[in-house]
Image 1 (cartoon, rainbow, N blue to C red):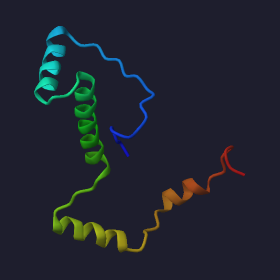
Image 2: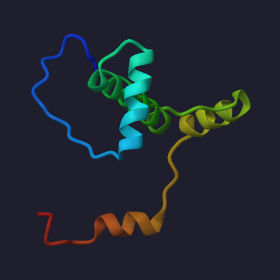
Image 3: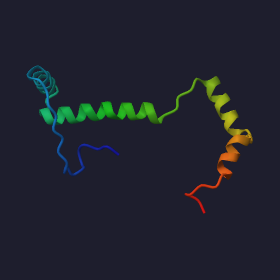
Length: 94
């Protein structure tokens, strides 16, 4: 999904940083034997993937997971007020 080695890079990303921030990034890149732009891209992509994984993955303790699956397997409940909302005529529906 997010490869950094085989994708053709056609987009530019410009960021502003203070001299101290840039120096810290440059030093970290040097320590990892990477160019500054490569370091910034790979580390920010790793952080982005982590954020996305946290928002896209459901994690449960075993007992909570079992209760969750049990609720998913139950028959749906009729909610009269919700049914009424769906039955209303709106200008957006035929």
